[in-house]
Image 1 (cartoon, rainbow, N blue to C red):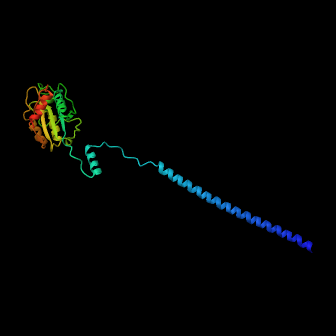
Image 2 (cartoon, rainbow, N blue to C red):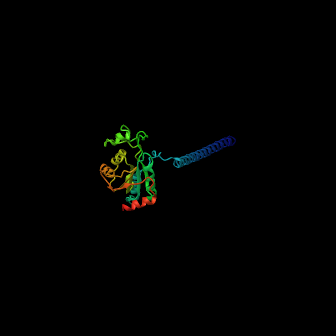
Image 3 (cartoon, rainbow, N blue to C red):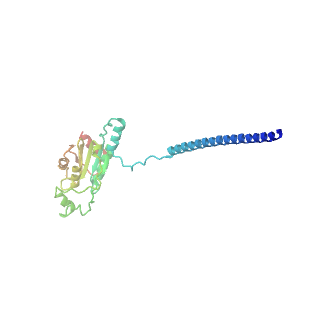
Length: 248
C-alpha cells in the first residue's frame, strides 16, 4: 500500500511544481508585456514632443505682402502711429522747379539750387520740343501755335515733385511771346501751392518777367507769389544771393 501511495504523491508534487512554474512564467510574461507597453507609450510621447518642437522651430512666418514704395506721407503716418504724435513740421526746405527748352534756364536753376541748398526738379514735356518747334519766326511752329492759344496745356512727362514737402518754390522758365510757356500753366494748375512762398524767375534775350508770374499765380489759385524777376544766363552765385536777399 505504501508503495502505491508514494508514486501517487510524487506525481502530485510534480504537477504542483509544474503549475507553479507556469504561473510564475505567466506572471513574468505579463510584467514584461506591461513594461514593454509602458516603454512604447513613453517612446511615442517622446517622439511626439520632439516632433512638436521641430515644427515650432522650423515653421516659417506667413509670407509678407509685396513691398510697396513708401511715400513721405506714409512715413509720417508710420511715425505718428509709432510715436503717438505727429512728427515735427519739416516744411522749411526749398525746391527749384524749372522748365528749360535749350538749357539756359537749367543753368540758372542749378546755380539757385547750389546757393540755397534747395532740391531741384525739371519739368520735362511728354513731347520734347525740337528746333523746328522753337522757331518763333514760323507762324505754324508748335510754340507759336501754343502761345497763341491760352487754353493749350502741354503734357508733362513725369510730374512727381511733392510740393507739400517744401515751404519755398523757385519756379523758373524762359519767356516765350512775352509770357511763360504753356507747359508752366499745366504745372501751375496741377499743384496745390497753399502755404508756399513761390518765387518765379525767367530767362530771356531781353524781355522782362512781365505779368507771367501773376498769370501763373492766377492759374494756381493758391500760395504766396512774389514778383520774382528775370535773371541773366551767366548770373553768378553771388549775384543770385543778392537777388534772393533783395526779396527778404
